[in-house]
Image 1 (cartoon, rainbow, N blue to C red):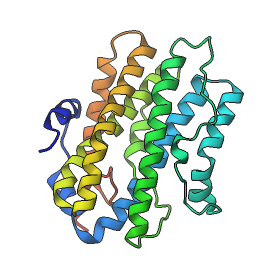
Image 2: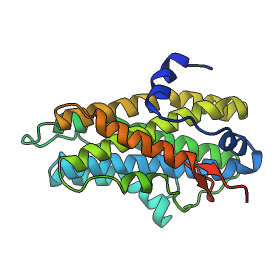
Image 3: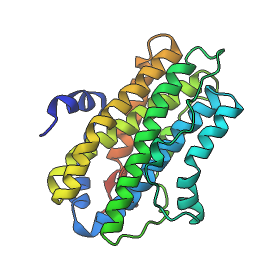
Length: 254
């Protein structure tokens, strides 16, 4: 397995591996379009989630507006289809640096880590979209699976616990993505295999950044909550799913 040292902490962090039945279904040629479209959607959702965290917890209205303008071309394409999908490097395109509010203890760290994550997720979105276009796969909005929703249902409703839990959930989503890219890569064609392997390092860093931020916000040990969500995440991906998605559970026999 390439990058075995990189994947070792991922496997330790996750409480259960992806099932063989999910991998068997995912490597079927007829599932390629479903996975690529869902993967494309997931990259944008990851960028949106990180941006919401910055806007809610770390910046003023002026900086929030700058962030919204950065994301607008991607959302125009996905939700309104009034953009052609030629982003021409817009993933790196902030017209000015985002500055955290001075009264937020963890603001600067949240902004630094999440802005980098957004840049990478938007770049990945464009890369997946380019692969889809080259293969004649039309972009579409697919119904989201239950994975992230079930994790987020268990997020506590008072601060700073809400933010801590959201960050831990983000860590598990990124770690699971990394694990699945690695599991799928050996079974795909050369282009997709190389692409998925190229994503491993950034996905692994994303999970670590989310965890580091959760610890910073908490100002202490978060192992109990990390373990709670680890058990929940494992339960979700080990249970049966009727909808096949990149983060779905064990495929239904139907």
